[in-house]
Image 1 (cartoon, each protein chain N blue to C red):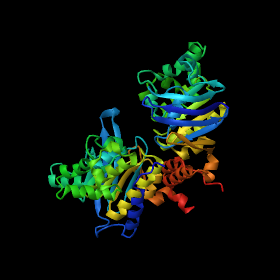
Image 2 (cartoon, each protein chain N blue to C red):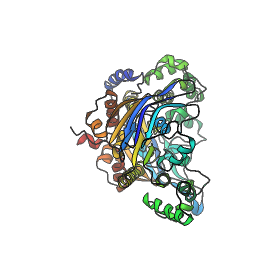
Image 3 (cartoon, rainbow over the protein chains, first blue to last red):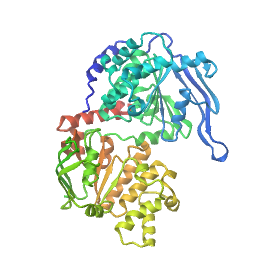
Image 4 (cartoon, rainbow over the protein chains, first blue to last red):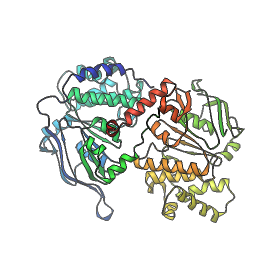
Length: 285
Length: 264
């Protein structure tokens, strides 16, 4: 198995995490992101692409959300809107009750700090010419987060099961799973409340996948982090998210508690999606 | 035996060993899954079979295809086999298909090269092939460029191309990894039924045990350029002998577990 040298660290930290409550602070249930009747249309006239058609959902603290769908469902468009990298054609996106507005610089800065992202493939999301320390410190620098950056880099490296000394190394010196840990450390550096994850394990080997899932689960419980995870993989959403929305053709087909959606799906599309997930037959012993 | 690989060793020009004495075989009509994680050498094995190793790499050992030695065969001999008696399907159909060539012309390629069909015969066979991979609206698809098709349609086209000359052996390298789950399920079903019907030998390369379990019977587990275990899919699922295979199985169970399975 492509053993990450970090496996043991995970197990230890996992135990620590188990002793803490699921959600930190008294503001559990606080509405972090709110999308209201969002549509996003590209182009105009008969050739226009309706990427999203009237999508509404909340991301509330402590209720990680899985956004499930296949190609063309509108996942990437939602991702961009959640990150403030695109504006809806109609409808609104709000952060902690305030509509996102580029002119409101204080709000945008707080939003950009609070909502961080981990991309699918750490081979392309980490700058190969920067040291790991510089990569992780980058959001602290660009967002002007006060405090001792070196100390923060060491701290987040340890959170993700890497060594403080790894800060001096370069991405190429790490395996795929370790690189995804670096990407997660970078996202954690500015102390976000929402971690947006775009298919965070699908570029990884199966053995490494479960380690990254464990890590994300631990960060949820230990840091009170709320995930907004875009994925085509129902199983991973099932392991990490309290709530799930199923997206199809730019609309929400179904939403609800993850367990409910995965075990008693209502929409035909959800049923089809679940039936297609390749699983292993049970051991015939 | 349709394909027998014996002591296949692949080295880089710098002398680094990438495949280390790999040996396995698959019977005529057999369905073999070749599983391993990144860097295990599974794709390299597939490339070595077809004499398609990246430049600078050298192969030693033996690759016997129906009794014929492929390692060290001339380029001319290999060309008469590739796409004809041994065909391959790749992970990403968008890179496997020529973006500047209409689908019809691409499917006609292997037919023109390896069969004596005339133009009308080729056109009829092309249509038949698209129907075989369950594509409707065949005329439109034959006129299309690859980028005008969906991912699933493209992979169906590349499967149709692979099947064009009724190959004895089909090598599929992660053919569904780039596809959506519902499309993946359709393509796996399709492959399964075609293989069943035509009796083609299948070598299915993947990192994904659940996917392999849908199409393959026998299983070769690779790690760091070596064969760890040669077994069957059902034996591996029932409890593999080798620890690494058990770890792979355990990992696969963990990442594909749905809440429904827990309740059951």
